[in-house]
Length: 128
Length: 128
Length: 128
Image 1 (tube, rainbow over the protein chains, first blue to last red):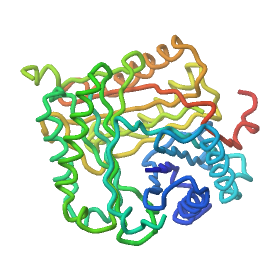
Image 2: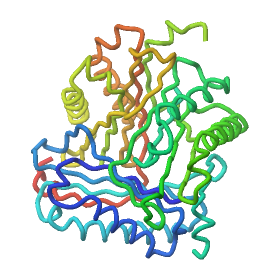
Image 3: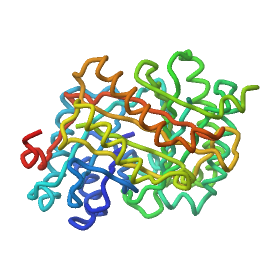
């Protein structure tokens, strides 16, 4: 049940297409081989209000939190994190080239004992 | 201070009323007897962009995170989680009957040492 | 990489200016001396749907989660939390004076091992 939560400032959408960004993150997660297709849920939320660093209007951020089921190795999580971050920076090349951008990612685990899920897509996508 | 955070894809609103969904989650939390009335805060956020599973337009998700004050027993948390999840699946019966839906819930605890709260409703609702 | 995530019910905006609230939180974080200027990201998200306490229309909430890099002392985190909370209650004086408001804050740490960041503002703001 990998959940990629993306938060971003509205001005990011002047520099890139957020649907394309989400799609690239999705593809990177899928290509990692770590996650079942049916479980991948990438979503993005535009902040209603932001105050960033020295408050220049150009300042922008994308912050991602990847929640994944516990039990995978630390190494797997490090590799996935590195891979997602590298791809994200690549897509954000325009933003990365100017001194106004903060990109971040954290991976946290979902407790097996205190989580519940029902997914009607698994049967349909059972070849994964 | 129970916080139920609901995130969902916009297409969920074609299948159910999100205000009614939130209200049912609220009622389930209240009926559990575990939470003080004045502290219950259920809220839902519609994602601005999503990419789900095999990217069919029909794919939809609701993901919930219940944050509750630490100190309750593991058993209480398991029962509350099961109850909320069962009720959620029930309300989502239309979505649950098609192979395009992912429903999830996690319960996490709020640190007592590193949290602060001021609630002006407790006095008014002191009979609870 | 301090992230202040603010969630709130839409009716809060009848009682205060959310941009001013965010700015006050930002200033409080900056004045604490704990956080590097380039890393501060305050953002607010208005809930699309809410159900709060006894469901009066006047019921409102602001819930904040401050995510900060691990490694600072418990004392630092307690002081920062107290300071932010005190300032927040001060700005919310109108809401705090009526029996319909819940204000909350939690501080959580960001894992160093499982987080990644790229920030093009640090070089520009290197005097901090």
